[in-house]
Length: 314
Ligand SMILES: Cc1cc2nc3c(=O)[nH]c(=O)nc-3n(C[C@H](O)[C@H](O)[C@H](O)COP(=O)(O)OP(=O)(O)OC[C@H]3O[C@@H](n4cnc5c(N)ncnc54)[C@H](O)[C@@H]3O)c2cc1C
Image 1 (cartoon, rainbow, N blue to C red):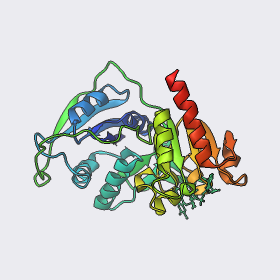
Image 2: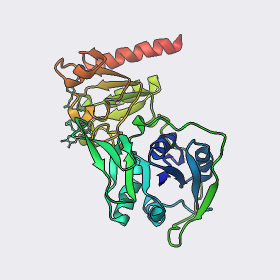
Image 3: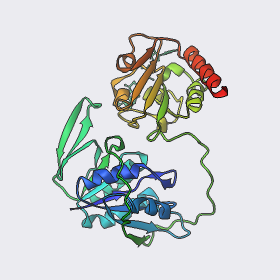
Protein backbone atom coordinates (compact mmCIF):
# COMPACT_ATOMS: atom_id res chain seq x y z
CA UNK A 1 0.00 0.00 0.00
CA UNK A 2 1.42 3.34 -1.01
CA UNK A 3 1.40 6.46 1.12
CA UNK A 4 2.06 10.01 -0.02
CA UNK A 5 3.50 12.15 2.78
CA UNK A 6 3.42 15.92 2.22
CA UNK A 7 6.60 17.56 3.54
CA UNK A 8 6.01 20.33 6.06
CA UNK A 9 7.14 23.84 5.48
CA UNK A 10 8.72 26.06 8.11
CA UNK A 11 8.86 29.64 6.84
CA UNK A 12 9.86 28.31 3.44
CA UNK A 13 12.59 25.98 4.76
CA UNK A 14 12.64 22.23 5.46
CA UNK A 15 10.76 21.50 8.66
CA UNK A 16 11.86 18.87 11.20
CA UNK A 17 8.19 17.91 11.52
CA UNK A 18 8.40 16.17 8.13
CA UNK A 19 10.43 13.34 9.70
CA UNK A 20 7.56 12.75 12.15
CA UNK A 21 4.97 12.60 9.37
CA UNK A 22 7.19 10.05 7.60
CA UNK A 23 7.11 7.84 10.70
CA UNK A 24 3.30 7.99 10.67
CA UNK A 25 3.33 7.19 6.95
CA UNK A 26 5.56 4.14 7.34
CA UNK A 27 3.04 2.69 9.82
CA UNK A 28 0.53 2.67 6.94
CA UNK A 29 2.64 1.52 4.00
CA UNK A 30 5.42 2.43 1.59
CA UNK A 31 6.14 6.12 1.63
CA UNK A 32 6.74 8.63 -1.16
CA UNK A 33 7.49 12.14 0.06
CA UNK A 34 6.19 15.18 -1.81
CA UNK A 35 8.23 18.38 -1.39
CA UNK A 36 7.21 21.75 -2.77
CA UNK A 37 7.48 25.45 -2.11
CA UNK A 38 10.57 27.58 -1.68
CA UNK A 39 13.86 25.73 -1.16
CA UNK A 40 12.29 22.56 -2.50
CA UNK A 41 15.79 21.33 -3.43
CA UNK A 42 16.88 21.60 0.24
CA UNK A 43 13.66 19.92 1.32
CA UNK A 44 14.26 17.08 -1.16
CA UNK A 45 17.80 16.61 0.16
CA UNK A 46 16.55 16.57 3.76
CA UNK A 47 13.76 14.12 2.87
CA UNK A 48 15.52 11.60 0.68
CA UNK A 49 17.71 10.37 3.57
CA UNK A 50 14.80 9.69 5.94
CA UNK A 51 14.30 6.04 6.82
CA UNK A 52 11.22 4.65 5.07
CA UNK A 53 11.09 7.15 2.20
CA UNK A 54 11.17 5.21 -1.08
CA UNK A 55 10.97 8.16 -3.46
CA UNK A 56 10.89 11.94 -3.24
CA UNK A 57 8.59 13.83 -5.59
CA UNK A 58 9.92 17.36 -5.93
CA UNK A 59 7.66 20.00 -7.42
CA UNK A 60 9.89 22.33 -9.42
CA UNK A 61 8.92 25.88 -10.20
CA UNK A 62 12.07 27.50 -11.66
CA UNK A 63 12.15 31.24 -11.11
CA UNK A 64 8.40 31.35 -10.62
CA UNK A 65 6.51 31.64 -7.38
CA UNK A 66 6.10 28.23 -5.77
CA UNK A 67 2.54 26.94 -5.95
CA UNK A 68 0.11 28.43 -3.46
CA UNK A 69 -1.55 25.97 -1.06
CA UNK A 70 -4.54 26.02 -3.39
CA UNK A 71 -2.44 24.99 -6.38
CA UNK A 72 -0.42 22.52 -4.34
CA UNK A 73 -3.72 20.88 -3.42
CA UNK A 74 -4.50 20.55 -7.12
CA UNK A 75 -1.15 18.86 -7.70
CA UNK A 76 -1.74 16.44 -4.79
CA UNK A 77 -5.27 15.67 -5.96
CA UNK A 78 -3.82 14.85 -9.39
CA UNK A 79 -1.50 12.27 -7.81
CA UNK A 80 -4.11 10.81 -5.47
CA UNK A 81 -5.13 7.83 -7.62
CA UNK A 82 -1.67 6.28 -7.07
CA UNK A 83 -1.97 6.33 -3.27
CA UNK A 84 -4.10 4.74 -0.58
CA UNK A 85 -3.16 7.31 2.06
CA UNK A 86 -2.16 10.97 1.88
CA UNK A 87 -0.60 12.23 5.12
CA UNK A 88 0.49 15.66 6.36
CA UNK A 89 1.45 17.09 9.72
CA UNK A 90 -1.42 18.81 11.52
CA UNK A 91 0.04 22.32 11.49
CA UNK A 92 -1.26 25.45 9.81
CA UNK A 93 0.23 24.42 6.46
CA UNK A 94 -0.88 20.77 6.60
CA UNK A 95 -4.42 21.55 7.72
CA UNK A 96 -4.75 24.19 5.00
CA UNK A 97 -3.51 21.96 2.16
CA UNK A 98 -5.37 18.84 3.23
CA UNK A 99 -8.66 20.71 3.64
CA UNK A 100 -8.31 21.85 0.04
CA UNK A 101 -7.35 18.36 -1.21
CA UNK A 102 -10.41 17.01 0.60
CA UNK A 103 -12.58 19.53 -1.25
CA UNK A 104 -11.14 18.49 -4.61
CA UNK A 105 -11.47 14.74 -3.91
CA UNK A 106 -14.81 15.13 -2.15
CA UNK A 107 -13.63 13.39 0.98
CA UNK A 108 -13.16 14.64 4.55
CA UNK A 109 -9.64 14.59 5.97
CA UNK A 110 -9.32 12.82 9.32
CA UNK A 111 -7.55 15.45 11.39
CA UNK A 112 -5.22 15.41 14.42
CA UNK A 113 -4.61 11.67 14.15
CA UNK A 114 -2.74 10.54 17.27
CA UNK A 115 -2.49 6.81 16.65
CA UNK A 116 -2.39 4.25 13.84
CA UNK A 117 -3.82 0.91 14.92
CA UNK A 118 -3.56 -0.93 11.61
CA UNK A 119 -3.52 -0.14 7.91
CA UNK A 120 -7.20 0.83 7.97
CA UNK A 121 -7.82 2.18 11.47
CA UNK A 122 -6.60 5.35 13.15
CA UNK A 123 -7.38 7.22 16.36
CA UNK A 124 -8.00 10.90 17.00
CA UNK A 125 -8.90 12.88 20.11
CA UNK A 126 -12.43 14.22 20.51
CA UNK A 127 -14.12 16.43 23.11
CA UNK A 128 -10.98 18.41 23.87
CA UNK A 129 -8.94 15.25 24.40
CA UNK A 130 -11.35 13.75 26.95
CA UNK A 131 -12.03 10.77 24.68
CA UNK A 132 -10.34 9.03 21.78
CA UNK A 133 -12.30 8.08 18.66
CA UNK A 134 -11.35 5.02 16.66
CA UNK A 135 -11.90 5.70 12.96
CA UNK A 136 -12.18 2.83 10.47
CA UNK A 137 -11.50 4.10 6.98
CA UNK A 138 -14.06 3.24 4.30
CA UNK A 139 -13.02 5.45 1.41
CA UNK A 140 -9.59 5.63 -0.22
CA UNK A 141 -7.41 7.50 -0.81
CA UNK A 142 -7.81 8.56 2.81
CA UNK A 143 -6.51 11.95 3.91
CA UNK A 144 -4.90 12.29 7.34
CA UNK A 145 -3.34 15.12 9.29
CA UNK A 146 -1.23 13.72 12.12
CA UNK A 147 -0.21 15.21 15.44
CA UNK A 148 3.56 15.53 15.15
CA UNK A 149 4.18 15.24 18.88
CA UNK A 150 3.05 11.60 19.06
CA UNK A 151 5.26 10.27 16.25
CA UNK A 152 9.03 10.08 16.73
CA UNK A 153 11.08 11.53 13.88
CA UNK A 154 12.19 9.01 11.23
CA UNK A 155 15.89 8.26 11.55
CA UNK A 156 18.38 9.34 8.90
CA UNK A 157 19.80 6.64 6.68
CA UNK A 158 22.68 6.38 4.23
CA UNK A 159 20.40 4.93 1.51
CA UNK A 160 19.19 7.94 -0.40
CA UNK A 161 15.78 7.68 -2.01
CA UNK A 162 15.63 8.74 -5.68
CA UNK A 163 14.18 12.17 -6.48
CA UNK A 164 11.56 12.52 -9.23
CA UNK A 165 10.79 15.97 -10.55
CA UNK A 166 7.23 17.13 -11.11
CA UNK A 167 6.80 20.18 -13.29
CA UNK A 168 4.08 22.61 -12.29
CA UNK A 169 0.95 21.94 -14.33
CA UNK A 170 -0.25 24.64 -16.71
CA UNK A 171 -2.12 27.44 -15.07
CA UNK A 172 -0.57 27.33 -11.60
CA UNK A 173 2.21 29.85 -12.29
CA UNK A 174 1.35 33.21 -10.89
CA UNK A 175 4.55 35.29 -10.80
CA UNK A 176 8.31 35.34 -10.37
CA UNK A 177 10.40 35.68 -7.23
CA UNK A 178 12.39 38.88 -7.05
CA UNK A 179 14.00 38.43 -3.64
CA UNK A 180 13.75 36.81 -0.24
CA UNK A 181 13.65 38.76 3.00
CA UNK A 182 14.31 37.30 6.43
CA UNK A 183 11.33 36.83 8.69
CA UNK A 184 11.09 39.48 11.40
CA UNK A 185 10.46 36.97 14.16
CA UNK A 186 13.56 35.32 15.57
CA UNK A 187 11.52 33.27 18.04
CA UNK A 188 11.16 29.53 17.66
CA UNK A 189 8.01 28.15 16.11
CA UNK A 190 5.36 27.10 18.64
CA UNK A 191 5.20 23.54 17.31
CA UNK A 192 8.94 23.03 17.68
CA UNK A 193 9.84 25.15 20.70
CA UNK A 194 11.42 23.49 23.72
CA UNK A 195 10.14 26.34 25.91
CA UNK A 196 6.82 28.15 25.57
CA UNK A 197 5.67 31.13 27.61
CA UNK A 198 1.94 31.61 27.11
CA UNK A 199 -0.38 34.36 28.24
CA UNK A 200 -4.10 34.63 28.81
CA UNK A 201 -6.72 37.28 29.40
CA UNK A 202 -5.04 38.06 32.71
CA UNK A 203 -2.63 40.19 30.64
CA UNK A 204 -5.55 42.52 29.85
CA UNK A 205 -4.00 44.50 26.94
CA UNK A 206 -1.78 43.99 23.90
CA UNK A 207 0.76 46.27 25.54
CA UNK A 208 1.00 44.30 28.77
CA UNK A 209 1.19 41.07 26.73
CA UNK A 210 4.76 42.23 26.02
CA UNK A 211 5.50 40.86 29.52
CA UNK A 212 5.04 37.37 28.05
CA UNK A 213 7.25 38.14 25.04
CA UNK A 214 10.05 39.56 27.21
CA UNK A 215 10.09 36.44 29.40
CA UNK A 216 9.99 34.17 26.32
CA UNK A 217 12.96 35.99 24.79
CA UNK A 218 14.96 35.73 28.00
CA UNK A 219 14.34 31.98 28.03
CA UNK A 220 14.85 31.56 24.27
CA UNK A 221 11.28 30.31 23.97
CA UNK A 222 8.19 30.82 21.84
CA UNK A 223 5.15 32.93 22.72
CA UNK A 224 1.73 31.30 22.96
CA UNK A 225 -1.72 32.43 24.03
CA UNK A 226 -5.19 31.32 24.97
CA UNK A 227 -8.21 31.79 22.79
CA UNK A 228 -9.39 34.24 25.43
CA UNK A 229 -6.35 36.41 24.72
CA UNK A 230 -6.84 36.04 20.95
CA UNK A 231 -10.55 36.89 21.11
CA UNK A 232 -9.78 39.92 23.27
CA UNK A 233 -7.43 41.13 20.51
CA UNK A 234 -4.26 40.91 22.62
CA UNK A 235 -2.42 38.71 20.09
CA UNK A 236 -2.94 37.32 16.56
CA UNK A 237 -4.73 33.96 16.14
CA UNK A 238 -1.59 32.06 15.05
CA UNK A 239 -0.39 32.14 18.68
CA UNK A 240 -3.45 30.29 19.99
CA UNK A 241 -2.80 27.01 21.76
CA UNK A 242 -5.55 24.48 22.43
CA UNK A 243 -8.33 22.44 20.97
CA UNK A 244 -8.95 24.90 18.14
CA UNK A 245 -5.37 26.21 18.04
CA UNK A 246 -1.95 24.59 18.07
CA UNK A 247 -1.21 21.40 19.97
CA UNK A 248 2.22 21.81 21.55
CA UNK A 249 4.62 19.60 23.47
CA UNK A 250 7.49 21.73 24.81
CA UNK A 251 9.83 20.56 27.56
CA UNK A 252 8.68 23.58 29.59
CA UNK A 253 5.37 25.47 29.37
CA UNK A 254 4.80 28.56 31.53
CA UNK A 255 1.24 29.91 31.65
CA UNK A 256 0.69 33.49 32.84
CA UNK A 257 -2.81 34.72 33.66
CA UNK A 258 -4.41 31.62 32.15
CA UNK A 259 -7.35 29.94 33.86
CA UNK A 260 -6.70 26.52 32.33
CA UNK A 261 -9.98 25.84 30.51
CA UNK A 262 -10.34 22.29 29.22
CA UNK A 263 -9.98 23.48 25.61
CA UNK A 264 -6.63 25.11 26.42
CA UNK A 265 -5.40 22.09 28.39
CA UNK A 266 -6.09 19.91 25.32
CA UNK A 267 -3.26 21.75 23.58
CA UNK A 268 -0.63 21.55 26.35
CA UNK A 269 -1.14 18.20 28.05
CA UNK A 270 1.91 16.62 26.37
CA UNK A 271 4.25 19.30 27.79
CA UNK A 272 7.19 17.99 29.81
CA UNK A 273 6.69 20.43 32.67
CA UNK A 274 3.83 22.87 33.26
CA UNK A 275 4.26 26.00 35.38
CA UNK A 276 1.15 27.98 36.32
CA UNK A 277 1.25 31.62 37.44
CA UNK A 278 -2.20 32.83 38.40
CA UNK A 279 -3.41 34.81 41.41
CA UNK A 280 -6.52 32.65 41.77
CA UNK A 281 -5.66 29.46 43.70
CA UNK A 282 -8.79 27.83 42.24
CA UNK A 283 -7.69 28.25 38.61
CA UNK A 284 -7.75 24.78 36.95
CA UNK A 285 -4.26 25.31 35.46
CA UNK A 286 -2.85 25.03 39.01
CA UNK A 287 -4.39 21.55 39.28
CA UNK A 288 -2.46 20.17 36.29
CA UNK A 289 0.75 22.15 36.88
CA UNK A 290 4.03 20.64 38.06
CA UNK A 291 4.84 24.01 39.67
CA UNK A 292 2.19 26.48 40.81
CA UNK A 293 2.73 30.09 41.73
CA UNK A 294 -0.33 31.76 43.25
CA UNK A 295 0.75 35.33 42.58
CA UNK A 296 0.20 38.44 40.55
CA UNK A 297 1.59 37.63 37.10
CA UNK A 298 3.25 41.01 36.56
CA UNK A 299 5.15 40.82 39.85
CA UNK A 300 6.14 37.20 39.21
CA UNK A 301 7.22 37.84 35.59
CA UNK A 302 9.28 40.84 36.58
CA UNK A 303 11.02 38.87 39.37
CA UNK A 304 11.67 35.94 37.01
CA UNK A 305 13.07 38.39 34.46
CA UNK A 306 15.45 39.84 37.06
CA UNK A 307 16.67 36.38 38.00
CA UNK A 308 17.22 35.46 34.33
CA UNK A 309 19.09 38.70 33.65
CA UNK A 310 21.29 38.18 36.71
CA UNK A 311 22.12 34.65 35.49
CA UNK A 312 22.87 35.86 31.97
CA UNK A 313 25.20 38.58 33.28
CA UNK A 314 27.18 36.13 35.41
C1 LIG B 1 -15.42 25.04 21.08
C2 LIG B 1 -14.43 25.81 21.89
C3 LIG B 1 -13.09 25.75 21.52
C4 LIG B 1 -12.13 26.45 22.27
N1 LIG B 1 -10.82 26.36 21.92
C5 LIG B 1 -9.89 26.98 22.69
C6 LIG B 1 -8.49 26.85 22.39
O1 LIG B 1 -8.09 26.23 21.40
N2 LIG B 1 -7.61 27.44 23.22
C7 LIG B 1 -7.99 28.14 24.33
O2 LIG B 1 -7.11 28.66 25.06
N3 LIG B 1 -9.30 28.29 24.63
C8 LIG B 1 -10.25 27.74 23.82
N4 LIG B 1 -11.57 27.93 24.11
C9 LIG B 1 -11.93 28.94 25.14
C10 LIG B 1 -11.80 28.41 26.57
O3 LIG B 1 -13.01 27.80 26.95
C11 LIG B 1 -11.53 29.58 27.55
O4 LIG B 1 -12.56 30.53 27.42
C12 LIG B 1 -10.19 30.29 27.34
O5 LIG B 1 -9.15 29.35 27.30
C13 LIG B 1 -9.96 31.23 28.52
O6 LIG B 1 -8.82 32.00 28.26
P1 LIG B 1 -7.99 32.65 29.46
O7 LIG B 1 -7.47 31.58 30.35
O8 LIG B 1 -7.03 33.57 28.82
O9 LIG B 1 -9.08 33.57 30.18
P2 LIG B 1 -9.81 33.43 31.55
O10 LIG B 1 -10.54 32.15 31.66
O11 LIG B 1 -10.60 34.70 31.71
O12 LIG B 1 -8.64 33.39 32.63
C14 LIG B 1 -7.84 34.48 32.94
C15 LIG B 1 -7.08 34.10 34.20
O13 LIG B 1 -6.14 35.12 34.50
C16 LIG B 1 -6.04 35.22 35.91
N5 LIG B 1 -5.53 36.56 36.19
C17 LIG B 1 -6.11 37.75 35.91
N6 LIG B 1 -5.30 38.77 36.29
C18 LIG B 1 -4.20 38.19 36.84
C19 LIG B 1 -3.01 38.72 37.40
N7 LIG B 1 -2.78 40.05 37.46
N8 LIG B 1 -2.09 37.86 37.87
C20 LIG B 1 -2.29 36.52 37.83
N9 LIG B 1 -3.40 35.95 37.29
C21 LIG B 1 -4.34 36.80 36.78
C22 LIG B 1 -7.45 34.98 36.42
O14 LIG B 1 -7.41 34.50 37.76
C23 LIG B 1 -7.96 33.94 35.43
O15 LIG B 1 -7.83 32.63 35.96
C24 LIG B 1 -12.53 27.25 23.38
C25 LIG B 1 -13.88 27.28 23.73
C26 LIG B 1 -14.81 26.58 23.00
C27 LIG B 1 -16.25 26.65 23.42
